[in-house]
Length: 80
Image 1 (tube, helix red, strand yellow):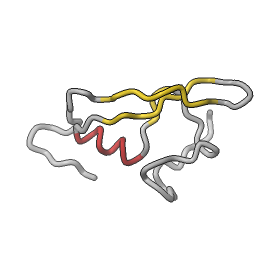
Image 2 (spheres, rainbow, N blue to C red):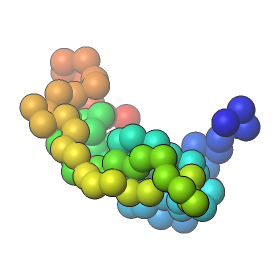
Image 3 (cartoon, rainbow, N blue to C red):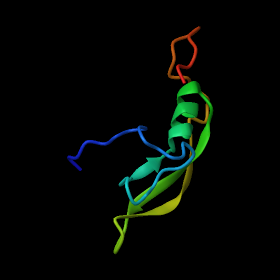
């Protein structure tokens, strides 16, 4: 968990992430979903929990930002 993460650099697909390269817990939006959430668009995202023998497994989905709150100041546009 102390290794640096490349973020979105080198992603082949913004719509999903590679679970073999990225260890995820809890709510796990894709890069594209993260951008949409910041803009205020509600998103149904995958939820991951600890499991055995694999580090994590998908436990379901959850609706994030149901009221459509934007991360940007009023009157400002999304940078994406």
